[in-house]
Image 1 (cartoon, rainbow, N blue to C red):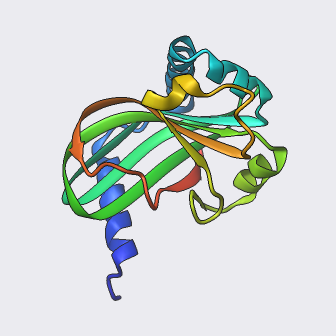
Image 2 (spheres, rainbow, N blue to C red; image 1 turned 135 degrees about the horizontal axis):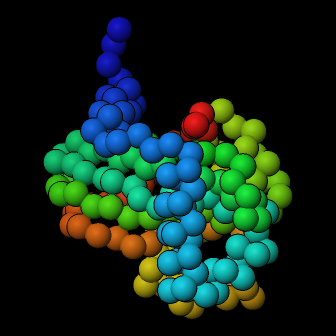
Length: 179
């Protein structure tokens, strides 16, 4: 079987995932709720965005590491209101200039019901391929208000810890977990 760039990178993400403990549903629930509460305490405007959204995917900790070849993996939950409706994993692989390890959280706000439905219908979903998202970062999050939010999906990366030169989540794939 030939090795493609995609299979090589995804195998790296799978290897990174295998290094960490597998969380059960109640552990993921607790981590997601704690991360969400911390996010809304730091940036209260995202609570009002969540209230307007059809659903919010919160992945409290994504671990990304690499030295030329990189991989990232995290697990979280899709919330509709306050109810967990799905457990989701994200895996990514990358190739290029990068060195180090970093952890961070990610929240995807599905503002429109159509965007949420497309995400839930997909058998594996990819930002930039299956849907475009407006990217928000810790530094610019303070300027976001409910009046400036008018796109169907918003992505927020928050709580970065560690050092990774060349960090991004390009090519990340989201899949439903069975827990």
